[in-house]
Every structure is written in structure tokens, then in C-alpha cells.
Length: 189
Image (cartoon, rainbow, N blue to C red; front, side, top):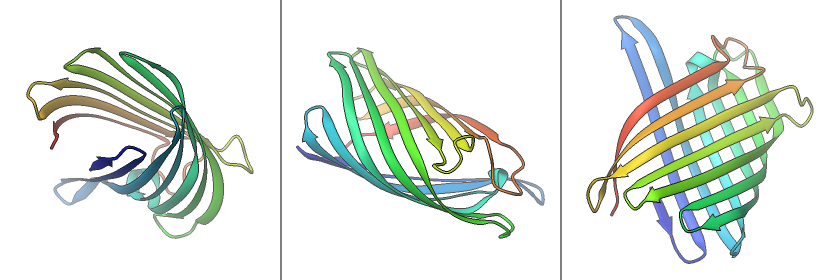
């Protein structure tokens, strides 16, 4: 859900994924994300966000995030926009078997762009780099890339690819790399 006024943008995202095979759980993950973006100048916005997530596969029983920082508009031409964000993020994480509880600060930088070659097609990409302040070799890279095709005034079909890598995953994680390819239908009202 997104609401945009002249100076403010409110964004709420959420997802729950559960996949079972007979008695075995293969996927059990979810997140809830709330973001506020305030326009200071045409090229500068201030963002604040919070997120709650869990993902058994990557060893996260619960992760709470709270962050804030500036977002800079680097390029804006008719069909192309690019942004860079540099945020501070406080993170509290509990691993799946509750043997590891961490409270730590991370730097969260991202590069985001959107490209609309024609009126009915849009390509959007955002890539995050999130090192731990106290250990720069403990970092995460996440990327989300999508292409949307508007086929009706209010309906859009999309294909989305997400990839997440954690150089030092929580204890109990079964992998340090996850990826997802999915199709979406979006309704604008």
C-alpha cells in the first residue's frame, strides 16, 4: 500500500511465504515494512523505516529494524530516474533456536533506478549493501528487480526477481544465499 502527497510518501509492504511438503516445512518466511519519505528539496528526501521479519531458511527467528537517513535524486530525465540512499539502521536479531541474540548498527546504502522506455512498460531495480559498523566483512547484499507491463488503466502484470546474500548468516542458517522469481498482478486505485 502506498500513499503519496506533495511532500510525503507512506509505504506499507508485507509478505508471508509458507511452503510445506507432507510433514516437512520447506519455506517459512515473512516481513512487514513501514517507510516514510519526506521531500526536503527536489533532489533530497529524508526517509525513516521500520521492519519486522522472520525466515527459518536463513536462520532468523525474528529481526527488527529501525533506520533513517537521506535519499538523493541523482538523475531525473523523462524516462529514467536514479536515487542513492545512505541510512543508519539499528538491528535486533534472534536466530531460529534462540542461541544468538544480537543488537547492532548497520550502514544501509542503496542504489535505485526506474526506466520507462514506453508508457506501458517500467523496469525498476534497487540494490542494497549493508555492512556491520564494527566488522566491515560482515555484510549483506540484497537486490530487487522487476519489470511491469500495464495492460489496463488500473491493472499491471509484473515479473520480480529478488536475491539476498549474507556474508555472516545467523547460527542455524541453512544457506547464505536466497533468491526468488515471482509473477505479480498490481491494482492501482
